[in-house]
Length: 330
Ligand code: IPD
Image (tube, rainbow, N blue to C red; front, side):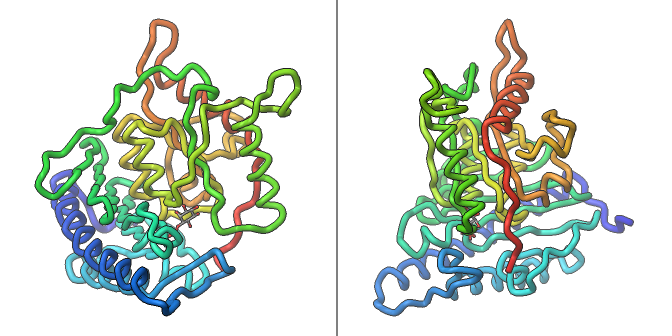
C-alpha cells in the first residue's frame, strides 16, 4: 500500500534537488575523468566480464548520491546500479517512491575519455517513472523532465531551458528514413552477439533484390555507449529511435520520462508480451522488462496521426529485429 503521496508541487521540489545533486555528482565525475586519463594506473574493475566495467568513481558517485537522497528523502527507496549489481538481484518495485540511479552511465566511455558520459537520476512512483534528470558533465548538458510538466535541456547552468524536442517532430514515413541507436551492451555471449549482429544487419542492410534478408536500410545506426543519453537524444529529436535489450531500470528510468514528455513513445521490443501490439503503456512491466524501444514524437499528417505512426514504426521495428534473452545481473 502506498503510504507516501507525491503532488506535482512535490515533484517540482524534487526536481530542483535532483538537478543540484546531478551537478554536484558531475564535479566528481569530471575529477575522476581527469584522474583516470592522466595516470598510468588502471583503476578499472570487471564485473561479470571484461566489458562490464566499474571504477572507484562509479562507487564514489553512487555513495554521494545515495547519502544525499537518504538525508533529504529518508522514506524513499533507492536502487543504484553499483549497490544492486553487488547484491546480484533487482529488488521488486513497490508503489512507494524509488530513486533509480546510474551514477555513471557510459562507464566505458568514461574510462576511454569519450565524452558521452552522464549521471542518470530517475524517480519511480506507483511503478511508473515520473521524474528524470540526465546530466553529461563533459558537455555540461542537463536534460530533465517531470510527468505532465514537459522536458527540457539546459545547455549550461546559466542558460535558459530549451523545451524538448529541439527539432520539429517531422513525419517519419518508414524505418528506412530513420537514424537509429543500438548498443552492443555487456552481454557478449554467442546468442546475444548473433541476435544483435543479425538485427543490426537487417536494420542497416539493403533488403532489395534479396540482398539482405529482412533489410530495411535505415539512414544509419549509431552507438554512443550510454542508454540514458540515447533516450535524451530521442527526446531531443536528433535520433529517431533507440533499441536495446539488457539495460536495467537505472539506465532508463530518467530517460523514459524525458522522452515521453517530449512526445516520445516507449515500448517493450518483445510484442509477444502484449498480443503483438504496441500499447504505448510504460508501466513496471516495461520499466523492469529489460527490452526497450523508444521512438521520437511524430507530428500528425493529413493521412496519419503521429501516435499511429509511432505505433506502426515500433511494430515494424520489433518485427525486424531478432529477440533475445537478456543476461542476468551476475
Ligand atoms: C551501460 C550503457 C551502455 C549500454 C549498457 C549499459 P553503464 O551502462 O548504458 O550504453 O549498452 O547496456 O549497461 O554500465 O555504463 O552504466
